[in-house]
Image (cartoon, rainbow, N blue to C red):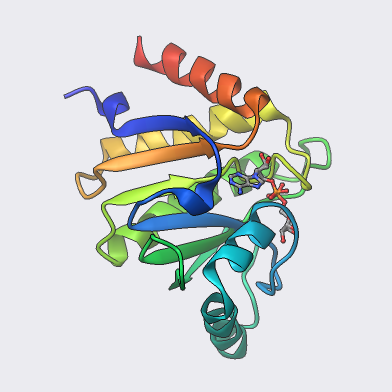
Length: 178
Ligand code: AR6
């Protein structure tokens, strides 16, 4: 089976997607913010923040590249996986490794929680300013590597809010699939 068939790209709002887990592009405080983080907390409601506060009490937030899991509250998904992408500062501060870690650690956490379907936003490509095309390569390559080595994930959906990310991801996926 061609593993690239496990990967889909959608244009739209990740809060509307029905999967086992949706991933949030959070920050180290886990207390919410703008962008997709704001949209997920708004749509999912207070229960998500309540779970985040329990994690904060336990481990004091989340480091860049790491991931934590909470309820999805009122969302259709079962869980929200919060991961913290790197802020782009030119590429000399391990941004690529940290962005790849976000995808890999989120997928690991999904598997540990028996999730078979997972949706990702384009982590770090908004407020954190990671260049779209570079981020798309990291996203697709990290996910492809993970799903090639694990049969526990059935579907990974990249949910793009804008045309630039949608076409960048489409381009990389097309290159990798041939
Ligand atoms: N569904 C899918 N994608 C979305 C949505 C949505 N509803 N809303 C925005 N995006 P960003 P970052 C896209 O800025 O760059 C927050 O304040 C958006 O177009 O949400 O990782 C956090 O608290 C972009 O392509 O996340 C952090 O402080 C992508 O999601 C900081 O922003 C990521 O943009 C994280 O910055």
